[in-house]
Image 1: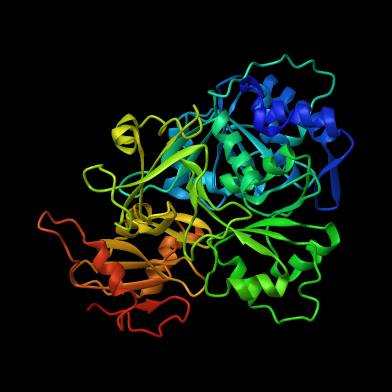
Image 2: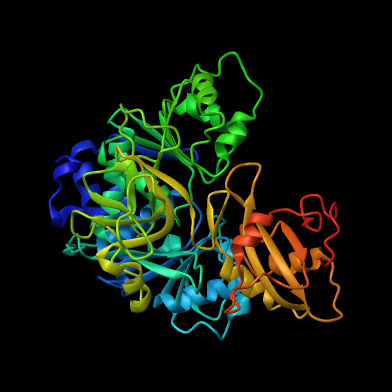
Length: 537
């Protein structure tokens, strides 16, 4: 069975694993730490774990929250839940406080699987979690020092691997929801994207098509599994019968040694990773490595040619999102115009609309809109948010909220985000969520959070703050307040105190003006800790 003609009832990751294990049973699928796992062993371990979760009452359609690091265990769990037809709800391991509480409650899950190191995040939430009944704790150390760490019934992850259990087959169709991924909200709370089986499958097949992966490829996967990219890269390797090196995180100093030792041929770069690799001192053997394919989001156009020549690689990129997939791309043997993010694939229709949802003529900017040519090849909507779903699919097109332009030859160009989302080091950040935390500080009257350019590409976070009368907190006080209540990557680097914010006649904050102002003489920089005054302007 090839990935292009997979039957509709065999597109779940568990079904794909069964097929690949039948074909490549004793071939190594992935390396993790000092261990190697064949396709057969992955199937066996995931089935054993599925038996344990079935014993806890998990069945088709049940939601399970996961707050785990990248590991072999996460892969076992991912395939185990698919085997049961359950719904995986991955949670960013940096989340804490109000946002973590919101996702746990909103998800509707009764079971949370969590790393031992994150258990302390649950203590401030005691009494506020409405649906979680059981905690499964993954501990890398012997014993159970976490037994009394939470008010919930808890079990050890390791104890859920059961032998000798005859698992029944669970029918899973391409239309079934397999995952709920929470994206950063912009004008409201974070939204849970309902991902059907076929959408998950098409993420991976599109990645294979874009990168021209084959059986001999070895992919380097260090991306967190709470994001879609780490998962579609793993499934892409499986679809072609390839191999994968799994690392919990990227080490720039170890990267090229890993590439050479394991014969890595491809990887996904997000954020400023290529900037960091490019900044390493040149070596005469830089191009003497097996790496040939880099999927870069985004491609650093300022040094692309030099990087490709130096390391003997080729870069590819695509345009897409958690809601709609990899909708625009360039074929491997095509040369796109400079700055283009590609053309639509056979799977999607893509256009540029004006404010009245009418197509824009070539070379006229507008909003990028998308719709699929195949059922269930995009999200099914936002969980429990019908109004947001209807708004997103206005006029039967998914409205991305991104501005772009299409030239006369059908090439698309991304211009900017029209939403207030911020992207820093590969993470999407909700300005709304950051503002909620800052505004909760007793000395703050109001805040507006905007992106400013980063020297590593993408964005840094800037908070423009109005203080209450008579209050003069040091900017670092706000930073520490944020550090206790939000993910580390969302904590503002820049803070500027102002007397007022620019507003429309209806009193909405004109954030585009704050973005255009960028860094001013009054902006305080956490990186230099006081180089700027940070005083109200």
